[in-house]
Image 1: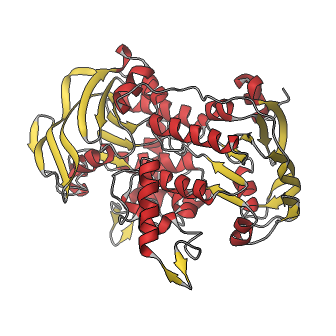
Image 2 (image 1 turned 90 degrees about the vertical axis):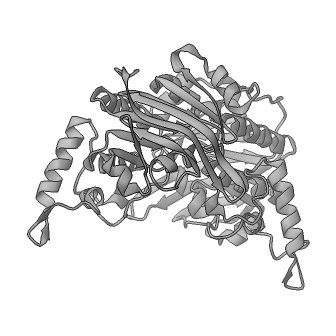
Image 3 (image 1 turned 135 degrees about the vertical axis):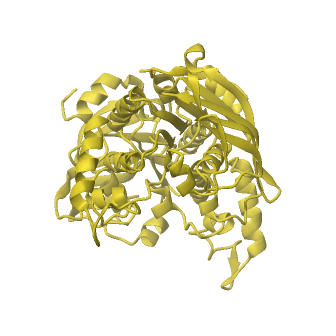
Length: 510
């Protein structure tokens, strides 16, 4: 998998980079050297300063001090246009695409080829097809972005930077929302790009991906430079220990326990998507108190619709959702919450947080009208703040003291921790966890897994929906496999077999 790295040519050198925000130091004297044709991983916990460092390189932030050299020449990059001129392109974790526009319109936006007074779409389309052919980035140039998968949208983002002539590509958490199949396809794309002499900087905390794709890896911890290592010389455990400063336990410790009464029962559930196509086709599912039921499946088989219906965000066409024996189907999100259902949603920015609210406000979104946070309709700001401070400490949300920061100012992983802290504190009978560790580093994943097991041990019912098969296998007491809108099979968690699960996820019978 490793690239044909040309060890002699340094394309990027960042020396002693310091970036401060007020009195907070996000990058504290960091060094980075990237060679032509290599994949260079940047590894660090959530909030370690990885994205900040790359935003400095891409001209989004001006460094407080330090030097940047591109192809041996010192440069000052004060905006992304300058970075693009220098051959640097960045694909952000949360895509920057205009949903109703076509693939072609998105790729050329801001760099449109003109023919007289009109945009020359024909030439643009031909160039896009040529690029997608060259790097095996299969896309339909005429499709609207809102109609294509997340993996396809990512290819559009990569094509956008290639169209502008980038030789150095920064990929920020590129696999955070991809299915296992799409991750394999992305790895193939990365091989094609480095094979053609492009250099890639990969911001990630997925150790398996670093081992599979990267030549060198620079580790950052709490804003400080720790080391740069040759990936083939170190193990995943070594990388994890350097990243969090201690040994990390990858296996989930949990004792077997007898589950209690049925908390959630889904009976013969049918639902359609926004196009009127049936996506749930008579789905049945049970979750008992004191057990974790894992729902395994390839993205797009009805998981999202199932969770949206249970949590009141979408309507079913027929069937029942019984919570403690009471049918809650087609109730509002508030009613469903009051009946005992809390959730860690699939899309943290769309359904989990109000991005322009502070951490304090996000922590009490569903409970701000109740004591101790309010009395006689008047908010108790002190109680809200004290609660947030405790949660920040308990859940290691960074940076420490971020109570008044807006949710949008936190890193993706820390946004996720805010949601988990809130939902665990809500203490409902059923917790639905949808990709609960998406975008989290190994230390935080270990923490969330322990927490889910703790909640199960307390007698809560947990429905775990995840595209990470290792997570499903490691945590679940029972595993249900969803395929084409129905449950296609079940197995006890302790007998979980990746091959059998994979077969059922593809529609076969184990």
